[in-house]
Structures are given as C-alpha cells and as structure tokens.
Length: 206
Image 1 (cartoon, helix red, strand yellow):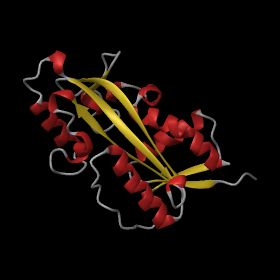
Image 2 (cartoon, helix red, strand yellow):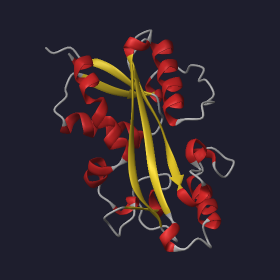
Image 3 (tube, helix red, strand yellow):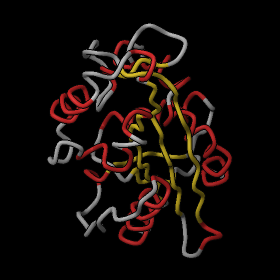
C-alpha cells in the first residue's frame, strides 16, 4: 500500500482545500492528503504583518509546520486595483475593517470606484503560495501567480468567494463567480501559483 503524507493547508476555507485537491488530481500527484486547520489541534497563529503577499504566506506556512510537524502550504492572496494604487492588496480580506466580510469588502470597493470610468478599472488577483516542510530556507518554496482583469460595476454570479463576483478576467465578459471550477482552476491566480508548486509537491509525495 502506498504511504500517504498529510499536507496541511493553512486555511479553514473548504473551497481552497478543494481547489488544491483538484490541482493535485489533475496533475496526477498522488500520495498527498490535504487537511485543513479544522482537522488539526488549534495553535497560535502569528499576525500577518508583512507588506507583501509572499511574506504573509510564509508566516502562515512556517506556523503550520512548526505547530503540527506536517508539511504545510499556505497562500496569501488579494486584489490589486490600479485606480487605488494597488490596494486593497494585502488588506483585501479586511478592507472594510472586518476580516472576511466578503459582502462589505466588495461593497466598499465598488463605492470607491463608483466614479472611475470603465477604461481605468484594471485590476489583478494575486496569490502567493508558500510550502514549508522543514526548518531552514532549503525546506521552503514561495511562488506567486497573477490573474489580470477589470472590476465590474456590480456583482454577478454565485460561485467563488471574496471579490470574485466583481472581478472580470481578461478575455471574458463573465465574472470569476460565473466561471466553472475547472475554468477557474485553469486561469486563476491561485491555480497558477499552485501549478508552480507542483514540482515540490511531487517530490514531497515521493
């Protein structure tokens, strides 16, 4: 019987866990069993104090590995909007002041862009993914993926999470919340970042 290595995903978001599972399956990587923070004993999580997505992803992955001994993958992702000088950026999840309130964050963003014309509503989703499987820099990998698009004037679609209902990827007239899971995996910022992690994940799977 092939040994299975548990891979901690430093998140309680079941959609992120499902996304990683789909990426591993599509790439034919077996031997890794993704588990979430809901599946391990609670541990202190350091504040996300870094000014970059990469720095915050590494904080979360190091914490997860140190607390559980499991190889840990963590992502820090968000939306950068040109007209807002790259914000919300690393503050995306708490843009409205309350962490994880998707509806409030989206409403505030749309209010801030209300008077911005369509040709100046360029934006990009950014995802940094960190994988830590031991102590020291030789046991960590950090990658970054981007997904370019524009901000719609109102939300559309029921899928996805975060700012997906107002983000229109380049090359389509649908929002990210209107795409199928397969379409999103193939193009999204997190999908592109996870793709870059596959060599390290394959090695981990043995």
